[in-house]
Each structure stands twice: as structure tokens, then as C-alpha cells.
Length: 139
Image (cartoon, rainbow, N blue to C red; front, top):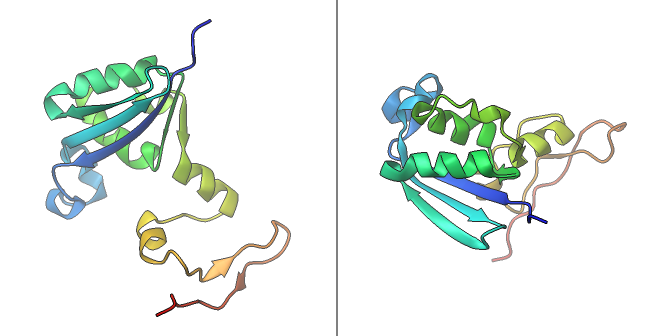
């Protein structure tokens, strides 16, 4: 029996959103580097822009693709390189998954810059959101 191939994906781009005119021009960001980890191969693979078609091929063969903000960022950047509708591939977008459960968007930048603080928390789905105290790291 064939081992399921779960592919973990992360992309970095050649340009920032401000350099290309914002989110409406996300297809102009261009891939700088893409890194995958394949559970079937048990290895990391690094793709540079000239090999991005090999990256897309690997994604089309995967049983599941896992990453953070794949649907709204990585796939939109990659879409400039292919006619395959990447959002239709079997995908677990961690940011989308968390946002759906919290009933609000999650910002990676906020989570990185404020790892010990939370302005709001949800106790249960039936309880309203409550404000909690922010904590400061020990000096």
C-alpha cells in the first residue's frame, strides 16, 4: 500500500506587497524560494524560481498540502506560474482553520510579535469574547 504523501509548504517571495502595489498585485510577488517536506519521501526539498514548476508538480501529486495562509497567499503567488487551480488541491490551511474556529482573522505578524499576550480570548463558543490582562515578559 502506498504511503500517503503529506506535503508541508512554505514560500518566500522576491518582492514585498508594498513593492508591487498591494494585495491586488499579489501575482507579481514572484517566488524567491519554496520549501516542502514530504512525508512519503521523508525529506525536505528546496525550489528556486527556475524550478517552481517542479514544486507545483509535487503539490499536484500530494494527498494533502499543509501550510500557513496557503489559500490567500502562497497559492496566489504560485498561480502566476500555472493554469492549474491550486485552491482545488487537498489543502489544510492552518490560518484558515484557526480563523474559522475563532470566528475572526488571525494575523501571523501579531502572533509573532506578541507571543505572550492576547487582547481577547474566547472561553467557549456560547460565551462572549472577554478582554483579558496583557502580560509582560519577565525582565
